[in-house]
Image (cartoon, rainbow, N blue to C red; front, side, top):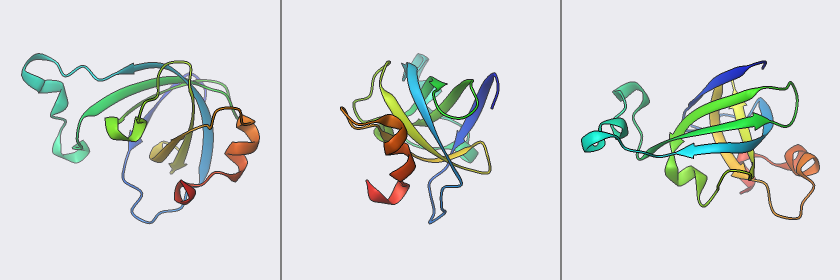
Length: 117
């Protein structure tokens, strides 16, 4: 992944993560727009409270990511926090999890899976 990569959110549906990346969050935007229009994505991407996350990849190939996902998946994360992202098909995100405070991010990423949260 070089440059900014746009990831697509999908529910896991019992799929296994094929790739994991570590991301430092640079921006979280959950603005809803006039009359909540930005909160009503197309049916193909419809999910509750869509939030745009941008971040810098800290593992693997350098670059940045952009991902729109349900706000609930981000809990209380903020810019500067580290996040594990589980991918299938290179650009489909099926899970996210904050890196625990006081842990080694690289070691945590190696052992983390969508199922052990």
